Length: 198
Image 1 (cartoon, one colour):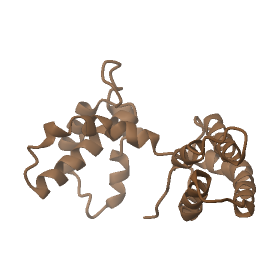
Image 2 (cartoon, rainbow, N blue to C red):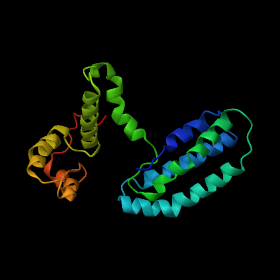
Image 3 (cartoon, helix red, strand yellow):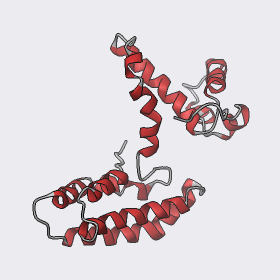
Image 4 (cartoon, rainbow, N blue to C red):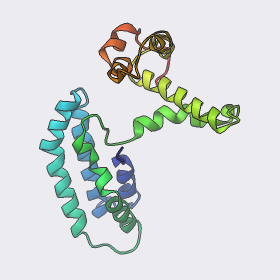
């Protein structure tokens, strides 16, 4: 597994320079261009998105890194933004290799917010094993929501059908039970508009 880091955090670092007419603003502008491209491709398949990223995002990033490498800065917020971005250079570019990856982790942060806000309610996880089990459960439920299916219905299908399958000998069967699979999307009813995604 390889690390993918977040362009929203990079943008925030350049925004925090409070340099609306200088180099900080240039950094923000590059990030905004990346996000604008991603919004245009949000309905594409991962394969199509990857192709567009190679055509448009990759040259934009090459220009961005050229600008950043040539930038001369003094100590201060701009230097911190540059150092932060350069340190994450490889992982910030990972989205160019996989159309399924997002350029920011805003979606993940929104998904875990209910758990974070309600952390005092989770004190019943009195052991590491209990906390680990809860983590798996929350992840499955939030992933179902993000894929537009009812979590209860999805869990019902998993608990009913998976025990009947020999998934350890034929691991490819797992793919039919991911929440984004055509099989699950057809079998499980859509997420109720009364259930919030996050």
